[in-house]
Image (cartoon, rainbow, N blue to C red):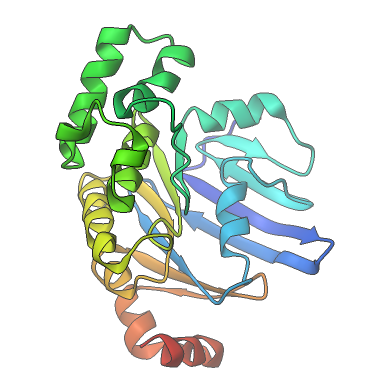
Length: 250
């Protein structure tokens, strides 16, 4: 089912449970504008990663309605709808998930050639442009094991961008990196935000959230505790649970 919603992402009364937890998502409702950068924060186990994974069908929902770029997802898993969404929504994970036996350019061009039937030459030209944008065009013919963690994560971002997504999801993209590699990945993400990409970012990187986010959404125990501007959230959080979290982080 398609809709003409003005929002890039809309969630209405989303519930999700696992055997290990009663509710991973507990009556979550939100909306994300096109071009908006939403940073999702919260303690471990608060439901952040589960939420973001529902936005491209990696996690199903038990009840409620999700609408991603006009395509609706509900508790009845619809493979056709999920495929449609994944063609328009890119995702970057904590781990880089690059194919170790493929060169960097082969990692990036694999999906455009196979999924979108792009000519190899056009796909390789796009890969070179994306790696240039990420600041690692000189790594084109190397293999993942020859790159640092930060470089591999930037390749993973380039790979997701190669399918020309309208939304980018980031699930703690710097958590597996050495501290000195974090900045180069966050800088690449800042460039994307400055170009107007719609982004949902699960992260504990407070500097990034302050500088880049349009809004910060704070979760705990599967619920949305509060949503506000970065300035309001970090300087004057409304909820006691948010303030306790920030006191531990800052």
